[in-house]
Image 1 (tube, rainbow, N blue to C red):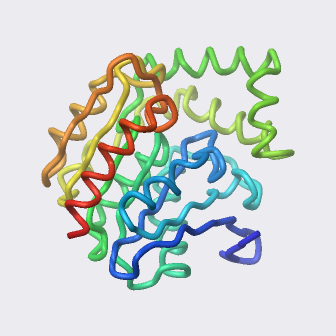
Image 2: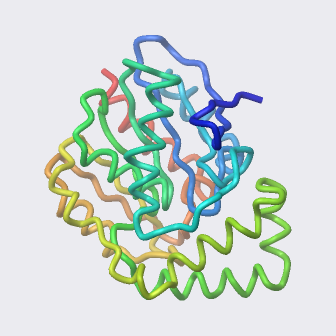
Length: 257
């Protein structure tokens, strides 16, 4: 098991995928209840198709990384983007060109990271990313809470997060549904993003509407391609893996040339 020591309190679990040295590294950023393992074989397949090396890791509080020790604030995604992710990049792939692939929370983190105009960042792929809070998100979380209380969702998450499962779920659900998070919004950062974007979302996403895609595409300064997948929910890379691989690999290969 590969662990990166961030500081005296935190360790990050990570895994790598081999690729051609001259190609950019794909960094996969998981969803709010996710971890590296929950991407399943998708990162390997995308790296294989593009020839790019890859990096996946569990954020603090997730999977095999250290547990959460502080309550979350409305800046928790910013902290992951401007503190944790840069430290991981600098420690594991310093000086290497990168493309971010972020799902849900990971997509929001990717956008925040991109707004800082990182010189080695070539592009960003978001999958079901959020830039503001919607009622559909809160409704989806309410359904997830019910499923967690009934045990099915909790059992599934426990396979990946172990004894961190309940604290992680509580942190995620309580943060997004708290009154102090209702005004969370990162649209003001979007004009600072100049790298190319591929913005994917399912039309049947239970946590967001196409308004998220429109805001990202309209708000960013660089070229942005919106793609809404029909009859698809919150995880296109798992629900329609072949189609998602085709779309992402075309985007990556254009940037990597």
